[in-house]
Length: 548
Image (tube, rainbow, N blue to C red):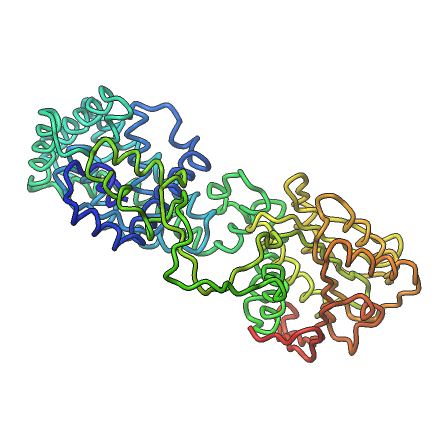
């Protein structure tokens, strides 16, 4: 992050350093991508957290959020190459930031954010207000109530350092309150008297004898809240991640601890059970991973070889690439005014570059986009027991994958003619409560594959599910007597380029589904003594071997 600011604002650079920049083009591109991703996050999920009215100026709240987000969410250590310049800009936030980075919760927060995007955002929504609160509360004159709340265990010698901390906080907020948004982002080498005075005050404050003890007391409340969050997430990360996908926008981070008191406690318990079951079974993971990634493979007959040599210049074009940049574009970096235009042209793809054509494989111009999925689950009585556990585990993982990739999904539960239910998880409709109820639903009843096939065919023709792939999960005891439905299936598969997968649990064949299935997987399963765990073994696969 700071490296990006350096590139944007260093006023003087030699021609040699300009070309050195291009030798490190990957670093530059990564920095630009990180900058854009951070801005998108601040303007999206974190916007309400940052925009909430406070005594801390909006520009300072945004800059603090950028630094913390870079560290926690993207796992990129914010390298402070020039501490004095950083202090001149951020003032009292500097010692707060250093203290946070040395805390026990910091690496755990980064680890949690790496595992789960939703948990990372939830952590930032808790941490940022706590930082703002500290800066607000201690910017006011000290009083006995404040001292008793935060420094019960500290002696009276803390008064002097508390007053000093309040002074640098006040100066920091005053500096940012008087600056324009553009000035708040300015990292030019010139520094005014106010910044120099603030820099001197902060460094003097950090040299005081009781500095470390003071900050331990100051951050005690923040440490406690973050430790609680870490404990909650480490224990319930799988549940939280799924809830964040099923119910986007709800602040589950504030209620994870109370989940056992919620009416859906049993649903969430089963959610955790099925997630664990899936992770413990390698063969099942291989099958679901194959189904989930198949549509990303480009058709082999559309991949072609370009005949051009690698060193051939075809033409000059506009692009955002700096690998084959024209020298005249590089010269812009020598001028402070043209430098900003250079980066603006880069972001807009308007840099003049050589188009080099070489011997390479070129994919099709338009790959098949990430499409939706329709899952049909046999919930008849013969699926009770081990097949039921496997089916719910597979559907749960497919739902999490589809939601995380922003792809639509429909789950069709079928048994006898009268036992039919559709659960939709899409952008337009999200019946998440129904999906949680499915996890505790006990399979039972007859089997009517004709109705199931007709329902799947009808869903395939819906606008939002055209081009969807379909997954059948059953025990293979299927009887398909409606030849007209089968014929329509073949037509629909060709028309919508759909693929049909059949996961057969405990059976010895796909039964009636063999006529329409492109890929079939026969598995057997043994439950453990508790009846909730067990082992899944792949017995046979047709269509393509699972070399994953």
